[in-house]
Length: 310
Image (cartoon, helix red, strand yellow):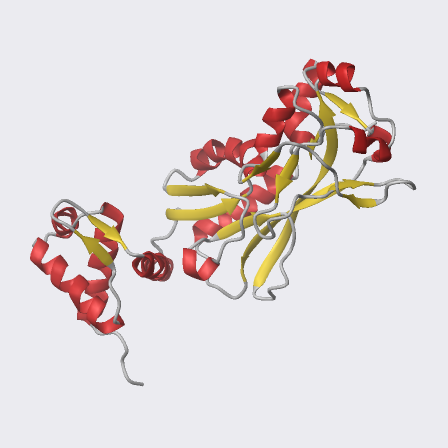
């Protein structure tokens, strides 16, 4: 079989990744014990091979181009897998190590996953976790993520999906808002209320509220003067400020409910849930750090206290 990568090319990829991580040819050269000119030649060699610019350069700094960023993420992941494979074969990978990248929705990150990370790193101190909190769908190949948490399983059969939990939904408002606007008794009463909206990034449409009763089964489109996007917790902040009603996850507002800062309404019309699912590419070599994190997260979230309903 004809070789596609010689030692010079692999060395160039390593130097490129160091320059991208450190943001400097000089720092990359120092860390690799070579000259800045050697790093520059390596990057130029790759750019000529790929037919694309990897960095934007000026006298003071370098910056990855869009193409360079995509190439870097995939090269970094490939090099990391090579290191893991070598350690495993030589018996050196006794302790999981390296960078683990995970993307997750804002509410789930803040209230479920991020509080667990210090516990995880106590067990695996050599693993560095990079957490991206975002409500948009990510591309594993282009963006170099190991794991993602999303609210639904995608149609992509190339992804493994493991359910983490079904999260209870609640509609809440402040006591002051309810005293001013009245307490809705049925789903139909929502038309007379200020319902805070969240715009879904993938569709640009407002997220429907979900109910489960004979007069309001399934999804309901509500109306309101406040529309949030990007961060689903913005709607919670507005609700806490008395702006109106908002539907969110019970785990986000359970402290507010206990303290009386927020009040749940339409309880008899709720009891609906939305899932959170852990995703990772099917058939990809899973490093030890990814395997232990998946096991840790699934086990820990199985024992997270759930708020009682009713």
